[in-house]
Image (cartoon, rainbow, N blue to C red; front, side, top):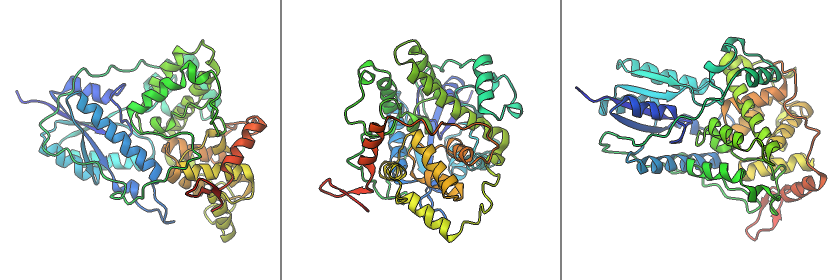
Length: 437
């Protein structure tokens, strides 16, 4: 009897733990072929000349893929890395390694689903099946108390019904071992330069460095709930919300950790002195689910409605205002500080995101999609559904009945003052002194 080989196509699920496609492939096949593709589509230049993926996020991704390879090697396996179109690479590897089936996690945003469809069509010509799994949400769609088409558009109603009538599944076990075919050419990790990007410069004002990979994700998860870290506010915490933000979103975005792993850690701490933080973190996981399910229900229509009278017809004045907003040169200290931190680090807290987005949309009357595209480039934790869904929510294009955040509830004045003083200037010179760009 011939051996069965399943190719596991890693995308935004760069982990060993709680990874259903990896466990299922190990159980169903004699050999598993793990593959990751760096798709040039995501590293192209946009019409405005910006990078679709900025260098902070690209560096994080490279670190995450390298960590996945290292972790697979610890199980006696390896990760094939290629740069190119997955619809061309995966069929070639399937033929070379006599693959019987390909597994991957289903996406919801149109760019990702279009790529999946191209891969599926290419494999179908070879009479190979691309099997879809659901592994990016806290609640499995089959456990929801309503079919996708009937999901409430109101987040408040969605949250109430899901929490009342659904349960979060336990995480799937980690494989004991992973057997791969004899891999003749595993491939090298590309450099940032090969992806068309420069090495990012880490700003000395930043208090967080996001190291890509499952290893770092698990460290951060346990660090967040450790009593020593939560007992007092860190002395050097300069960001708004620095003392209670989990900062897990970059790892969640590329699947170095799953929402279920975070949830069950929350569950362990639901009765301790950090219950409020745990509750807020669970709320954020629910918002992530909500936006993914809204994209699943509505598709692009969820973010297609017009926002302003001149939406899609941005004037020269609006473009000038947008550039000032993007560069942190509006003259409004808090807005500018948030944008300076974003540009210098690739990360700002949720509250900053809501405030700068609201300012761009409601005060400057700019096209909200420009802001969403700018965040797509800059954010380390960019996730299509969350980013575009949040921006559309702020802009009011999806008939939202409630605001996601109460923007007026800022941090204490001293925290805001410290944050603004730290990030009021755009850059820092080589001597470490703040200078205005």
